[in-house]
Image (cartoon, rainbow over all chains, first blue to last red; front, side, top):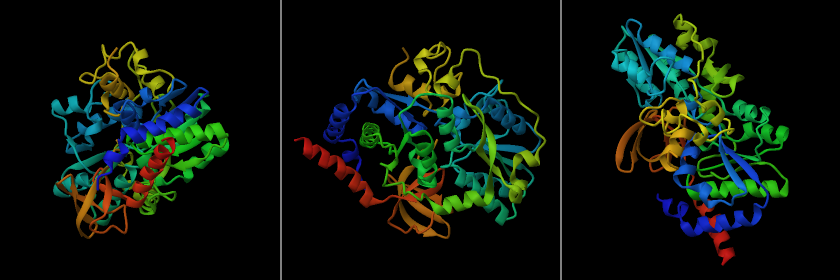
Length: 361
Length: 73
């Protein structure tokens, strides 16, 4: 299976660009809410292929970027407790808490392990019954089913020393939060792999309540240009709707098995988002039936406050209000090798993608 | 973080599968995806198969762009 040649074909992309240029006479602002899109858009130089009338904004689509410092502080606190091991995806390891990152805490001897899958954390728990294994559940609807599956497996196999510190987040409340803050956008480039799980039903209220079109996009240049063209056509025809461009991986109904597992294990919870604050029911935590796997029920956790570093514009950048180049720290005090803000840590963060593909000036 | 990569399913046992990612063999979980069979291409995310890639739809997407290009000539 290799369609890459087609999805990166100059000729096919030029045909799409030509159509976009013909139709996009008025200024249009489209926002992507997926870190994978943020990276692909910069990597493939998509903005340079579009007419000046079209602006592409990065929204709160990178889970690492929107996760608060207090969550990292909690994880570091747990990793310092006796017989406790914190397991995390590698994405999170360099994000700073108030005083340190997980990487720094690990270097100082705290028990922090990087895992490939949530199931690796369950295996670690089985092999080390004397330890308490805490898995950091970070990510949107794409990642949450894997965490739910790990809890189901632990429950089924009687693994009592495994729990999840959940910062899982749901996309629609953040998309509505952006609109509610009055940030002007003409369409959403909707996340591809979140939609693989959820399907497209959750986007209909955005169209119906706010009149903003939603196109679920793939990650290749042709995907992104085709999605932008679909949004342009919706605006020109004044008919916002939900469409799927990424049909090879997204069905309107999504992945029913993954949804079933999520519903079985989780319930909605309020969550804090960088830039947006606390959004009602925008997160997921283990429900009453699985509370013994909720780290917050198992451990007594101190309160940590959300304190953002001086000068960091991550919150504004995640709402599309500022670009990384407008931050005084960007490329100077804040670089990929020494990140201050979370958007510079993740390879999918707006700041790191700008730094990598647009240059630091 | 929602990065997902395509992989070919080589073999299955229970709710696990052995897949090939560009020739590299990996063990992944099928706990959140049903109706997978050997030979399918699936999207892998954090150790889980999350969807079977629809080859017909992949072709259709390209065909739309090809038709647009033909229309321009």
